[in-house]
Amino acid sequence: MAVDATMPSTVVSAAGTGTATSNNTASTATTGIADNFQTFLTLLTTQLQHQNPLDPLDTNQFTQQLVQFAGIEQQLKSNEQLKSLVEIEKSTQATNALIYVGNTVAVDGSKAVFDKSATWNFQPDKDITATITITNSAGQTAYTGNYPLKKAGSSFIWDGRGNDGVQWPAGTYTLTATGKDSSGNNVAISTEVQGIVDSVDLTSSPPLLSIGGHSYTTDKIKRVLRPTTTSS
Image (cartoon, rainbow, N blue to C red; front, side, top):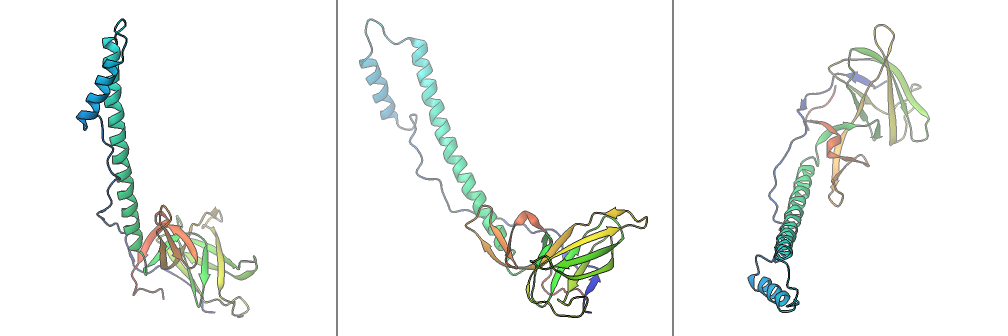
């Protein structure tokens, strides 16, 4: 049976980061009171002309209005600057996501699309023996077996054949791994799905990577494998 539990291939450390320069600018800046001296004078003189001469505007109130004008102006400018920063961040996320297109990556997950082969990675806390079970989308068991997994990491490559040698059709399959240490105690095993990034959906925020028909955010990527490296 052409199933294999091996050490993982050499990987490139962590997801790469990129820099991007945004050409987007904030919308037309709001003209503030301090930037438009004529508007400020018009507001000031209109208020003074229409005040009650027998009860003129209190100096403290007048000062408070000036402070409020300045506060509103600063808030409007801050909003524009924040909007610009958000646009720059979105552009950076999109650029970073595009880096992964065409690359083989490993992401958190247990579901993989089988088409000629499917690969899962494991990162146990210690050397253990695990019972690996693969089921199809209907919950039927396609394959099960026991394999040793190394603390440094192991990969499991499935060729689509069941325990009886029958070839299972292409589709989405889920792998679960239950491990026991040397003392017979159950050990939790985290699984990763390995596949090629087919495309990136830049309309989503954050962008979504498509791997075998499933979508993942970039923070789910655990490692990037060299395109020429394969598990033997």
